[in-house]
Amino acid sequence: MTKAAVGAVVVLALAVLYWWLSQSGALETLGDERALQDQVRRFGFWGPLAIIVMIAGAIILSPIPSGPIALVAGAVYGPILGTIYVVAGAEAGAIVAFSIARIFGYEAMRHWSRVEPLLDLLRKDRSQNWLMAIVFASRLVPFISFDAISYAAGLTPLAFWRFAVATLVGVVPISFLLTYFGKEFITADPTRMMIIAVAVGGITLLPIALKLLWERYRDG
Image (tube, rainbow, N blue to C red):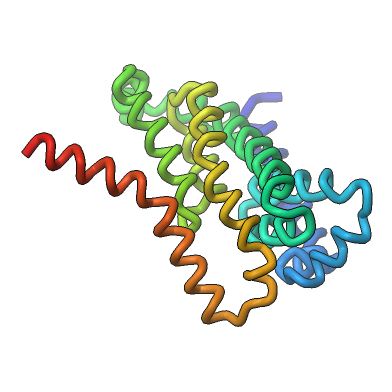
């Protein structure tokens, strides 16, 4: 069986899994923070593993939101343990998504004559550093799709270890902030939730903004 055929089977399997989750009502629970919190508590000893698996699954099955799961992790286990579980799940899910795109998408793109020059350019060390920086920066912003970046990165020549490191380092701050504000999010009204979300995005972007301002001042 060719890689293209295997890739089609993988995509079909993910689509069927998403359909089953939708029909079973699991997706509705994943989108309801309070219901999800109760469910995680009922898992007892297996609760942390459930958080890790749900976060990873939400990234691999892109339409599933991972934010509510991270909030529940913080509400149930606190910011420290919650962050550990969320980071573990996010890293695992990102690696699987990256690998799917790399194995079944990138190899196909290499056969396109118009794309090959761009891929050659992206293989250079400078381009690798930029790609790594883009992945890292995207992990700091809660409004950029974590899932889409993971799949998109797999379609580039970005080295696996660079992707894994950039994702791990970048996902820790936002995971901590989401788990820290977990209870606040779950109990807050929508307006207050939006204010906190904007604050989280601003805090995570602040280091990058300061670095850009410093470089502009130094060059200028």
